[in-house]
Amino acid sequence: MGDNLLDKIYLDDVLAKLSVLGPYHAVSFAWLTLALLFETMCYSSFMFIAEEVRYSCADNTSAYNISQSTKFSYEQNTTTAWCNSPMPCSQWIYEDPNSFVAEFQLACQEWKRTLVGTAHAAGYMLGIFFVGSLSDRFGRRNIAIVTGLTAAVFGLTKSFVSYYWIYIAIEFFEGAIADPYSPLYMLILEMVATGSRATFTSMSNAGLVLGGMSLALIKWLVPYWRTYTRVIYAPMVFYIFLIILVDESPRWLLTKGKKNTVVMNIENAAKLNKIEIKENLSTLSYEKETSSNFMAVIAKTFKSKSLLKRFFVCIIWWNTCTFVDHGLLINSVLLKGNRYVNYGVISFVRLPSALVSAILLNNYKRKGPLMLSFVACTVLCISHSFINQNQAWFGIAIYMASKLTSGMFFNITYIFTSELFPTYTRNSMHALCACLGRIGNIIATQMPLLAAYWSGLPVVIYGATSLVAALVTTLVPDTADVSLPDTVRQAEAIDSCKKGRTASF
Image 1: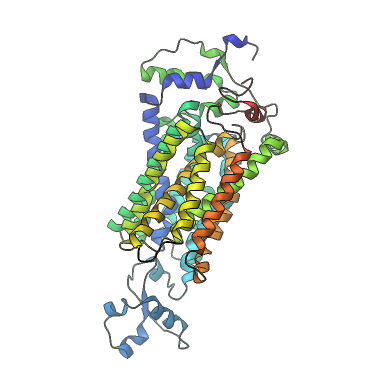
Image 2 (image 1 turned 180 degrees about the vertical axis):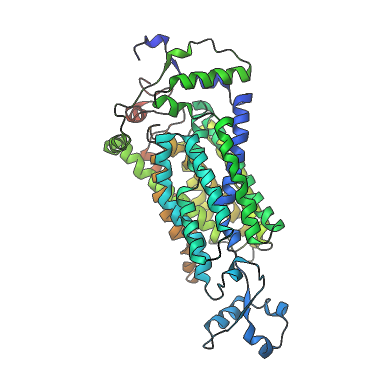
């Protein structure tokens, strides 16, 4: 740190010379995209493992004198009548006798079927901050590897479980300590220069899109839930190879004082890209946090009025994202047909959302695109509630456009939140915002109940919530042209930085 300021070089400048279009970042991105593909399949697998299965009471077979296939074509209220009958059923007949519902005998216990997803979501909500904190302390790549391998163990184990409550416990702990998405996202964010962050992180949605589409396709081809689970989770052993396929985050390494490792990685990257870096990498400039104690840095973050304000704004963003995006998904009753095709289509919507987000972020910074997507969602949601029921095609188009905008502000919120906090606590603060933001997800599951009063009420509330989020966005600084801050001091300096590096970086 004693070098003359003019002799120093900055990480952003070096990363910009490497270019995201070069072989180094292209190869790294390919491996990370594959890792995200596998992660997405595991994270959402419970939707198809514990999927709804129709059933009937065997005691009623002779009474109704109908075939089994006809019986399963009954409306849902017929099944409800069987479950509410004062006469107990001694044996249930399931449409798919090899399904999760049939093997665990969950007839007339719908809450047990849906509890699988609830347990996973609750575990994820409680564990995301824990995983984020470990990522800040021990490295993005390292924690991604550990959580990915843990997911493989949990997933393969639960495919052999025969006791329902043991399965639920595994589902909970898998969500809590075995999801590598958060550290993977931070690794992608921190391995590129400032000008490439929006494009590179938006491109990472390719892994999520391919994962969602692959999940539906595999379930279609492998219907038995135990075999399906093994096919989904077995590829997670791939994560062990990330230790040799992908470098650790250079920003995280610098904050830990491991400049020699960063220099070596940059030299190898330059060699792979066949370029020469003329600058003396030994003068690479970085600033270490004044306190080496992780919890002390967390406390210092919350003592900062500027960062505390950003934190509360991010909480509103995240609750809006999970509430609106998930709410639009579960209220999407307009989509009919094959459930696997529908899920694949919904997953594909992430792609145009990511592409539009990247274009806007690269040309109009952060605050403008985020506010625009929130306001657009407000207008589309409220408009949808007043569409004539006879204009079904128009209603579907508006609904899908609403889902597109909710995907956009979710993408932007991910990157914007990450840029507002220092490297020392970036993953922890991002994870804490995401954790508290899952409250919106929980509330969204109850929104269909309001449709009984007015079918348009849920989407009107989604629109109003999006408008509130747009308004609070005015309270935070734009981070588009600012280097990622490493310390609390640098993060605070963003408020007074108009363009370029934060003051005294």
